[in-house]
Image 1 (cartoon, rainbow, N blue to C red):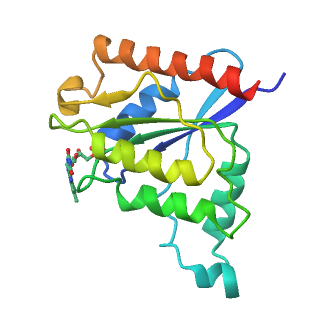
Image 2: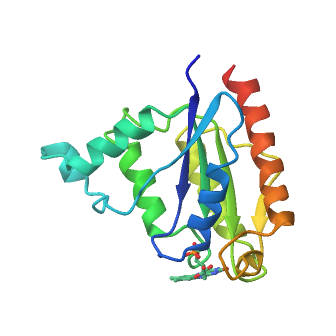
Amino acid sequence: MMNKTIGLFAGSLRKESYSKKLAKAIAEMAPEGFEFKLISLGNLPIYNQDFDDHGPVPEEYIKFRNEVKSLKGLIFITPEYNRSIPGVLKNAIDVGSRPKGESVWNGKPGAVFSSSPGNLSGFGANHHLRQSLVSLIVSVMQQPEVYLAKVHEVFDENGKINERTLGFLQKAVDAYIEWFKKIAG
Ligand SMILES: Cc1cc2nc3c(=O)[nH]c(=O)nc-3n(C[C@H](O)[C@H](O)[C@H](O)COP(=O)(O)O)c2cc1C
């Protein structure tokens, strides 16, 4: 049987982004029967409804929408910008949500993992994202909640994530997969 593909969406464009590093580590955690795929968000033009209403629709939108359509599930790995999610992630969500009635997010089971170098661990971003996902009919795993505080401290000088954090992330991924199987069959 074909692997089920789960998309990983890291909400940062920064070269040394902690979110991207977490996403790369999570990409290695897929169990048998699943494949985790890093989805790139950085080349999407800022959403403008005129593209959909009057055309031409940017190629990048078409490619992104088709890519998300082919996914069975979604894991968002977000930092926090000004107590919300970074614009690059919100833009991707908006692009995927339109044209009206053709959202590519609809019905896909999701999970939200957040982090920050401070103590707040991206709580504000995590819950703002959940708010958008409610309107997009993405059921989000309720527990375990994943908040990583002091995220810069989980990496060693080679960028490797410490065992404790890897174990924590693996447990969250395992819980997501179990929950995914229950609700997606
Ligand atoms: C525009 C901007 C706003 C930020 N706002 C917050 C914030 O509200 N809360 C927080 O914990 N960190 C905030 N930060 C710090 C980010 O958490 C930090 O830069 C983090 O490393 C970004 O994630 P990344 O490593 O994946 O790029 C902000 C950073 C930027 C650039």
